[in-house]
Image 1 (tube, helix red, strand yellow):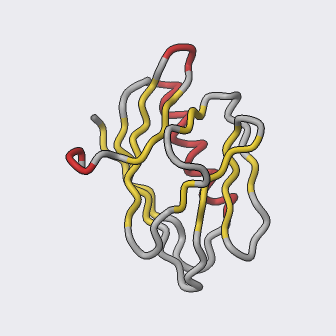
Image 2 (spheres, rainbow, N blue to C red):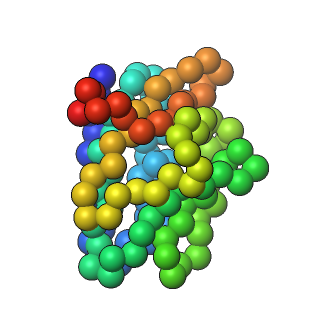
Length: 115
């Protein structure tokens, strides 16, 4: 399983920025499908929390006090986690990206033994 680390900007991260990281991960999966263990660091100076929700089958990236960023991953994001998925503040959240049939990707919290 390939390991990837995503560090969200610490000054004033936006939901759009987090969505951009996920869009890049999906582009990488398009180019070469494989399982990935993604470590997402969301430390920020304001202490605002991030979450990933679903609306109409597509992920919505949220941060307290900011407008949400609605992604369009063409129905590829298959949430296998509780909704909304709250990302840990000031520490890592580990997610597994697992390709399935039809160019879709399961996204779930990583099992502790994969860390």
